[in-house]
Length: 189
Length: 189
DNA sequence: AGGCTTACCTAGAGGTCCTAGGCAAATTAT
DNA sequence: ATAATTTGCCTAGGACCTCTAGGTAAGCCT
Image (cartoon, rainbow over the protein chains, first blue to last red):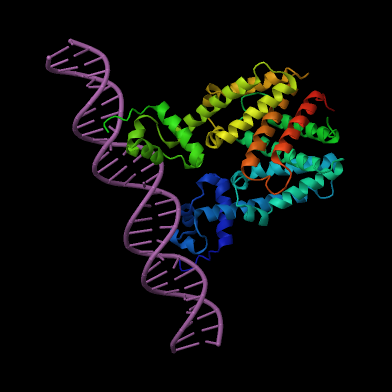
């Protein structure tokens, strides 16, 4: 067991898989060390501490999410693009619950700037090119869209929608219709 | 130090204050015991375990939030009520960050049913009486509103809106305008 | 081959969670 | 008023997690 071939990247990848299995809050240095068959202390050559590991995981997840969303909206525009964006976002959250939780960490502004967080805004802004929106309404709309998508999947996962028989899927589709019609009619009061 | 007068309720209250001070994820049995000047083990006569404590905290916060929202919308209707609801919701999240985090815990369905979670839906439903909405659109709209409110304050707290100069307050007001106009025009496609 | 770096180790301190079992004060029963 | 019971907090200790200090052994470089 001389060399397990650990690197910060391999640790982060494994941590991401672990997060999806056991939940983001259960990603520990110990569990990760067990997974590689090494002692806890060995990981501290590659990561500064447990928080550092979580931040790396968050940055990884943000980049993955941005990639998947970018792929899904390529070649689409208008409502098509909006729906593709939203579905890609929601699908990622469902398929990678631990990774998605990681994206919700509060990151240092500098780290956040380096990460894919900016790419998210850019892509949302690209969506809005299909609608007749200009600053500052564009930023307001981006924030509204992001809030609604995040809020929906977040509440969905927390079980907040289970108390009513109305299908979660049906409400989701209806929500996308509503957002589309909202954006088209934006020049409000 | 014979009797510190501990009860489950006093522990929950103190845990809520602690959460607002140091963050929900840092509410530990140990820290709570320290606050009362007793040993960790003493708390286990009043709470089953750490998770139980967090659930009690969540139920407390949900009830408080429901109360404050209920008070704020009393006597209002239409957009007035919508704005009052949203502002009360957001204000609670800002003033009680730890408590608000607690409200986002995934609760057992039975516990959630017993808690104030139902009151939230009822109140949101009351808001919609000012608009011309019936099932199942009503439920869809409730979910949309709840998602947007939660998503907004959640992203706001995570610092997701800091990267752009547009004021967070201005976007919030604009978001409320947008939701009001959306609800008035709901009968969509 | 000698020196340096890398990758992992042991040892150990300190924190959190939680159980088992105990004692003494407060409450209730007689 | 005293006895029985319950309540409230205790000590002791195991299990797990975080992280530091210091060490060894393997691989790389000249």
